[in-house]
Length: 383
Image (tube, rainbow, N blue to C red):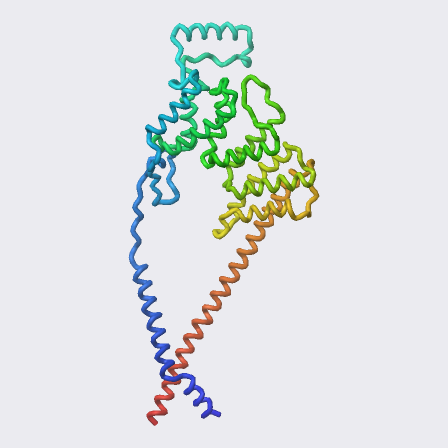
């Protein structure tokens, strides 16, 4: 029996196997030495600069290599030409000043008028006292300047400035052209502040979707009372949702599909549908996604499940409340699923570490066995 075992080991552990194991061990040794050498020296500090954009924001970019350098395709001359053309459409607007300063005589008269008013009022009812320098709220110069500051646009970035001008011209086209400077400030200023990520194509797609439901294009006016059919409040909700979301053409296809499905289920009230679409556009699981899930597929599947599964009984009265509850519950389950996945990842990592230990021990004893066998063979040959 002993002789058979010796023959078996002699056959199993030949010289060629030992040579191979020696080469593998030597390669492992050299690779380890190389990795140690690569990581031996202290790393140098990454070179960086403070950009003009960082200085304006008083905050640094997360990417140290980001330079924010501006390489505009539009020249100042081209932008000024477009800007002056727009100015000519509203010639009576204030384009030169952002504030007004009263003369000493005008200020004295206003002060006296204010004092006469408060003589018969209690202190709590006092109107604000006049000031000699006051902002012009509908100044177009101030309007453009505040939008550019809100979007952190450099004065030399004429590409970005032209994008703003395109949006302003479009919103101007929706007015009745009377008191347009006032309308632009009162109606569209907030949306323009938030519109850095909102393209003209998205604005037009939103308006197309809105019109397909209301059958009435909105007309913004200071003189006429807004018709209920225009649903201007809901239109601005769609604008704001688009400002806060990464909107793609595929998402608008999904919104159209939702509208058709709601109509099929006899949910056609325009206010309900438009408010629901705003909520759909605001669905975002970004903070719950893994690095491999940065597209919109998770949100798309979640939304489709609500509208297509047939498990939920929705009507005009409960569809918005049901959708809110559905998203809240889906978020909780998604968080729980992420925790469960994390637990499985930790377990798998522990199992991998355990397996590595066995591999190392096995390799060690394998090499040890090879040495023993070689020594036995050498001793036999000498005998």
